[in-house]
Amino acid sequence: MKALLKVGYRCNDHCSFCHTLEVRHIDGSAAEVDAKIHRAAALGHSMVVLSGGEPTMRPELLHWARLVAAQGLDLGLVTNGRMLAYPQLVDQLIEQRLRYVYLSLHGGSAKIHNLMVRSDAFEQTYGALANLSGRGLDLHVNCVVTRHNVEHLCAVVDALRPYPDASLKFSMVEPKGGGSRLFDHLMPPVAHVAARVREAFAYAAERAPSVAARLRHGAIPLCLMSGLEDRFDDLKTHAYRTMIEVGEPDFYPVDDHNKLHPPACDGCALRGPCPGLYRGYHEVFGERELQPRRAGLRANSYNYTLDPAPPLTVADDAHCPLRDGPLGVTPWDRGRDLFIRHRGKVARYRAGTRDFNDAELVAIKHQHGQLYVDVGRGPASDDFARDLVKLARAPLCAACPHHDRCTGLYEPQLDHNLFRDADALVRDHLAQLRGDVIDLGCGQAPYADALAPHARAGRLTYLGLDPDPRQLALLRRRWPWAELKVGAAEQLADPRDPLGLHDRRFDHALMLRSWNHLRDPLPVLKAIFSERLRPGGTLTVVDNTAFGLARAAAQARRAEASPAGHEHFRNDSAADAARTITAAAPALSLVSSSDIAPATANQWLLIYRAP
Figure 1 (cartoon, rainbow, N blue to C red):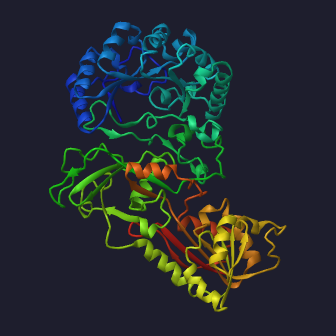
Figure 2 (cartoon, one colour):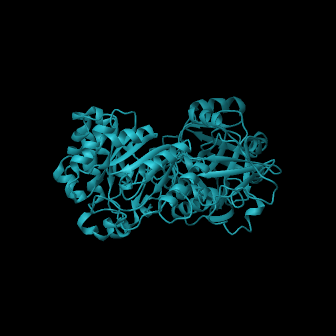
Figure 3 (cartoon, one colour):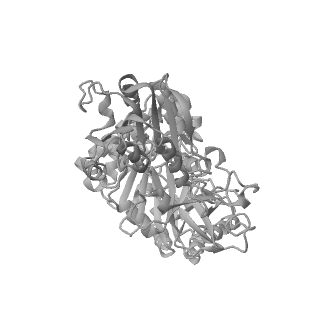
């Protein structure tokens, strides 16, 4: 767990794309950096990574290395490597627990690298690799891609061949500092960068397998990196939790606020792990280069894993361990950190997921309020009412001045089962249905008890469709009164009628927790409304939005190793589904709706009636 500490912004290189170009005259004092090292230790970090500017220029470097080691922490450096060309300095730093180096090398030759950094620096920077390699360090090389080197990336791969223990990352230049001031001079189209980076990956696979295994890319939308999505790399993949600039009063969580997902990314299966586009890039180039993936599975939940540190003790319900205690408010990520108070103790959890991006996590946690403690004993939660306990912000958060920027203090809601309430709403509606019913994606039939009495009494005929023949075989034994067909809802839109329904029509169409499993609901809805639903018939749609689960480490491991994989193509809310339904069948009228909110379960309900 790394803390990134900027010691100042002076540098012995003069990179045209330097993102701290405007503040190169600013340095932090030795006392300020000392205090921040102590603060990083108090927050529970395991490593302090010094950055700048160029941290190795500071005469206090070895003092800081000794101070970090004295706190029981490891040391890291983000550096241009020029000072690390001196073996004695590297030896001294390793003696003081230097364990991680993130080194900048922007060309495979002196001509390209020196052009990029506007200094005669290649021999020193490249020479540092010889001193660092083979020393057991977590060693990374970062190559920023601009117009000046985008056609020369394979040469960087060749330069890394002698150092197979160093990873190599190609990073899209950031439009900040020099990257903003010299935008037109430096900024290549992101699709072109992606193409050249893919070429470098292919070149490494063929010519330099030892390098290929450790190649990475950063700040390039994943839709442009087909087949290499798992090679994405950023501060979070390097286990950075917080960072602090010169003059800032405390550490802040690492974030991606300098990037965005434009409207073209809506519905993309890669949106969760994808970095999106730099905001400054999008302002100039827009989103026309993006190639969103509309088909692809997404997770509908993620884990907050219990921190192994002992829980905090709080004096009483009126005191907050963040606002009133030594931890403070600012270092904690609003989406990824979770503090739960129960019986006078406060446990800390952390979400390391890449299935959801930071903005999505904040929305799930704070806007939708869909957090739960998993109290089940199985590998995955299949009965939410039994296995999940809702979490809500503690009452003392309501009037706190930090409410809208703090990660919050949460407490389990043990006195009410919101999932049973949500299910009761659905059952009450289903119990009123009569006539011919088609259930699209009947699955495990969670509401069989509401439908069965009327089916047995002849007041209701039931046709259930599901693509899983094994699940239907189980249902046939339980439901002798039901007609069950193996098939997907999408086949309703096939004019060849593969389901053999011919001209059958129904009084009621049900999608009970199957909406988010549809690849594309639009043609299914059009087929239901135009061909299958009788006049005055109803469409009932029920599903769940994404949610977070607080789990012990062993629980999280079991869940992630379980055979229950991603089954959802989206995590639509009622509002999202309503927009699609209106677009597909504008003549349907909304009869009833129940969307999610912080005080509800994560299940929503929509009921429509045909004219």
